[in-house]
Length: 222
Image (cartoon, rainbow, N blue to C red):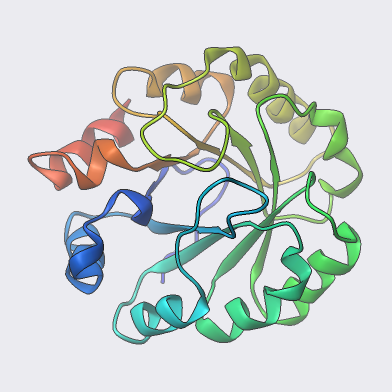
């Protein structure tokens, strides 16, 4: 599996936008369309007002597909579920600073399980809330919509925070990816790359596109 650096452009279609009646086929379609990662939104109906799927579904998809699983835990108590998603085959697990858990312990649990670590901040959460752990993570995910539902409009007011995250990374000689999730697509991806993002979560603009491969390439080129 290819290793990516902060200078690579990574396209991660969000399975939340796929056809849930044929998830296995949808993952294969993303792989064939040259997706780099697959983004898996795990929602508990409490931390966010929606429910998606659990570790059993992730395990079955992982068993039959060779793609990097980028798992985003939108859970009130993510630490309680990290072991299950590690066992299911998560390659990277991201947890929210806003959730109820000990961030240091959660990140250590992810690392000990052999996965990459990520930290997530919501649109109205300042970068400062993530700074204590940015030297410990492989990825910072900046939400560009409020989490919980797909298909929301991109929030351009998050762009300055993305730029601050990039500047902080360079000033401190760190290497984390900057990922964005929410409303990203060909219409705004150039702004995201310019601000410093290099990993783009895209749901509707990939899975619902007439030609998924073309949509992914358009997002990659910016």
